[in-house]
Amino acid sequence: MQEHLIIDGNNALFAIPDLAREMEIDRERARESLLLFLEPLGKLGNDLLTVVFDGKGGPQKILKHKGMDHYSIIYSSSVDGADGVIEKMLMNAQHPERIVVVTNDGLIRNCAYANGSTAMRVEEIFKRLDHVIESSNSIRNKSKTSDLFPDFENKIPFPD
Image 1 (cartoon, rainbow, N blue to C red):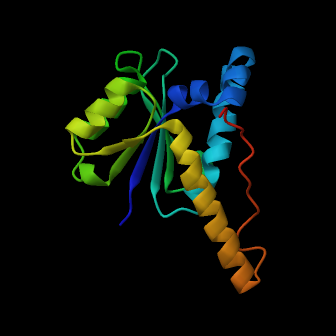
Image 2 (cartoon, rainbow, N blue to C red; image 1 turned 180 degrees about the vertical axis):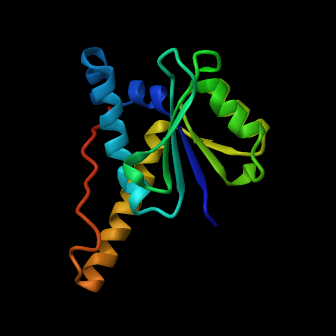
């Protein structure tokens, strides 16, 4: 069954130490680093992936990351904010049981549970990312087709 992973982008940026440091220098570069890091989930995974960021004071924008059908980026309007967008997505979902919200924000996690969805902490998404990468490498090794999947590796350290 296909799941829809909704990632609280700003929350993820602050939960990952390397990206939090990058945020202090260049917010856009840190966002791009997160999107790039999550890319294997959009390319190799079977799930839908949506990363929600706070917007830049304008209307809400929805983009496809590098033209991938399963990987979307939402920049919230200044009215709703990223949390408001995630809440609306949860409340309006036809199949909330297929949604997994990735955030360390307790209010958003509670909203997910209240609407019949699940939630995982930001640190847990990297286990899923590692699994997708390992599975693709296993398939590649069995098929001996190195062009089928590029090499990906999780290189973001987490404190113990």
